[in-house]
Length: 432
Image (tube, rainbow, N blue to C red):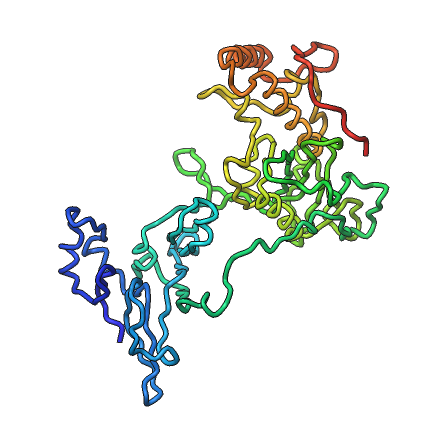
């Protein structure tokens, strides 16, 4: 029988709730939850399963640190470790949500940090953060109800090879057929990578994404006149573009995927996205249409390879796409040309000011935006070479903000005023 109460992880024996007070003493070097919190812990981190001689299954608590004794029959005694819990967070207003606690293994941490250890993480929508292992097994039926408990048999890797390898191969970036029936090669907006062009760690990739709205925001007006959001609008990625960041074909797109969707689009946001009705419909679209999974695999491969993405407002883009990219692999021009505690500057204004480019005229175009972000990064390197002249670059930013305030951050109409052009250093790109 599994007993309710605490479990001494350091000694591998069951203890009473009262004894946890002493273990929680800071002088002992242990950090355990309070007695009140322990009342909500009734799931063990490890369990021992033994098949008795009468063929009955005996289940009992077990320590994470203990191993089977030589007298235990390995054919009839097994240890299972808790690897994940999924809980339902109750909320009468919204119906609640699911939150996961996952024990991330040694393979990941060894690859990322050069150390060997395991750690519990909380997965809550876009939030991922480390948590204490006790939090994974704390349940309060009034608001935190367990939905799934996932145990895995210990030492499976001695029998099976469980080493995690990158399952995504470079072939995902090669040419693929479009889902659109009317798409023609002569209308292609990108040139797939050749094997000789496959990206390496540290290579630059210009990226831009466009989105559409699937559900409008639901809000209500309070009695004091303020607005309360009941349900936020739901955005969905509709187009992802990646352009080469170096080499003879620098600036030429190698991914320009329109994402097919079966859900109802309530607003194509054409003015901002460039996406038009029909572009995402396989029956009538003339674009290179793909599935979301196909494009995800391409981006995931690029992330795992270690490329550096260059773009404008990438933090928000990756959040809506639902991808986590390491900070050292993101170069965001919105922050490169920014003075702390002052407003963020649009890509259109930066392109006009530094590159004498007029972009985003009637609508946005993700190929144009990705190329422009790359050019701005090149300009940044020219103006601030490895940060050797920070004072000079601060003067450049100060001039940028002064000009922006004078123009109310609006790009002048054609021929009304030329930009303070500093000379673009970006090489010409191939015409598609």
